[in-house]
Length: 253
Image (cartoon, rainbow, N blue to C red; front, side, top):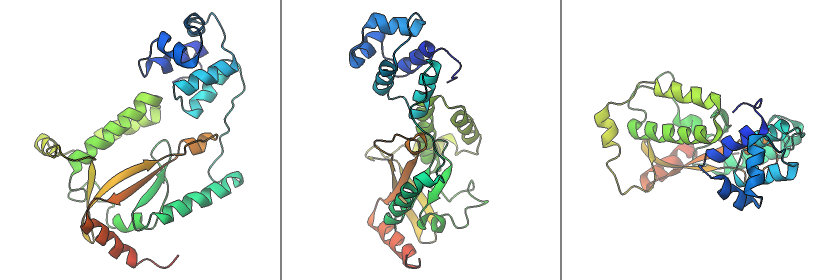
């Protein structure tokens, strides 16, 4: 979403993403529908407080809240530091402890563009021999199902953010070799499943993993708000035992 647009157009775009009417948003944010309409059409400039309240109700990402504020003529509110900034040293240490604490489960940290930031020691063990054969079967045994899951997750983030880098990433992923239609249909056969598993071939045999995603609950820094911790938990006893065997070879921390 371009920051060069007037604040009213930016705000209208964020309201329309979840398909909220002006009446719905006005009611949730305790502002008049007329005033909200004037803001969106450029007839009225919102106060800083009102703009932040509307952004909160619309769950606008912190980066985009800064753009809304700038478009309205206000100073950005949320700082953005590099993760290697000395001010975030305590946060980096905490994140590394969290990653380590998930062992023997693989866990990794990614930024808003799905770029790997850090990972615990289990992740390299599971990716041994993956390059350059990552796209060649049968590393991911349920590739059709996992591919569909990732693309759907990516599409949801694009719908929320409109981020051009994520749009390009989705196009790149769709261009990779994909399973045929029959395999894709078969991957959805288990209607009783409660989550999409990742079935990964490893030195310890087939691992069946369930992914969980954790984000900061109350961030006030743009960088922290865009980090996601993804942990892969064992979906069965055999996978749990295999992960413990893999971890047994790791040196003491």
